[in-house]
Image 1 (tube, one colour):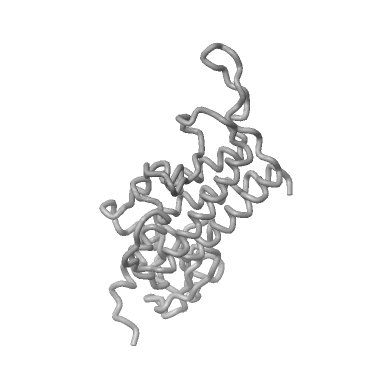
Image 2: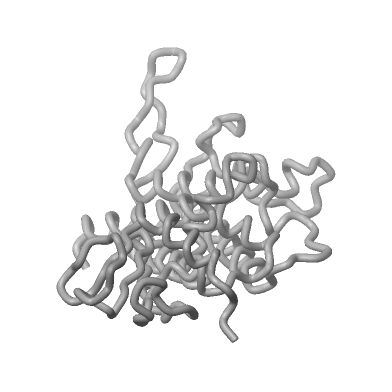
Length: 257
C-alpha cells in the first residue's frame, strides 16, 4: 500500500474513534438501544444537559464498573482503549528519543508498581482522545526535525520518523478499533428494517447507516407514499434533518400488537 494512503486511512480511523467515543461512553451507561431510533439521532435529541465532556472521564480501562447497563459497549470500549494504548506504547518504544520527562509531547509508559497514580498509569491516564492524537502525530512524523536548545545548539529531535512496517501495523490496529466501535453503536454499513410501518402508506421503512454518513430512512411506498419528504428514485427518503420529525410521528403511534 502507498505510504500516503496508509497515513490517510489511519488518520481517518483515529478521527472516527475520537468523534464517536462520547457516544460509546454514553452507551455504556444506558441499556442497549432498539433499532429505532438510531443512536446518532437519539444522541442529538437528548439535549445539551446530557452531552458528555469526554475529556473529564477517566479511561474505561482505569475505572471501576460495578453495574454497566450495556456490557457489549463496555467490552468494546475497553478493547478499543487497550488497542490504542498498546499501539502508542509500541510506537514510543520505536521512535521516541530520550528527552525531557516533563515534555508534554512525550508518551510515558504505565508503571503498575509506582505509588504516584500518574506514574502508575502513565500517559494512559489522559484517556483515549490524547492517545489517538499522540499516535496521529507519530503517523504524520511530527517533531522529527532537530530542535534548537537553550544554548543555541541543535539537539536531537524528540521523535524519529515512523518506519513503514509500524505505519501499516498502526493502520491495521486503528481500522479494527474503528470497525468495532461503529459496529457496537450500529453505525457500520447496514440496512435494517424499522419495526413499524410508514404512517403515510403502510410501506416498509428501512434504516440505512454507514460510517461516513448520517442515518437515513427510506419508505418503499415510493410515489404512492404521501410522506412530506423527497422522492429519490422509487423510495421516499428521510435524510438526517428529516429524522426528528419522523421520530416524533412514529413515537405518537400505538405500539404494534
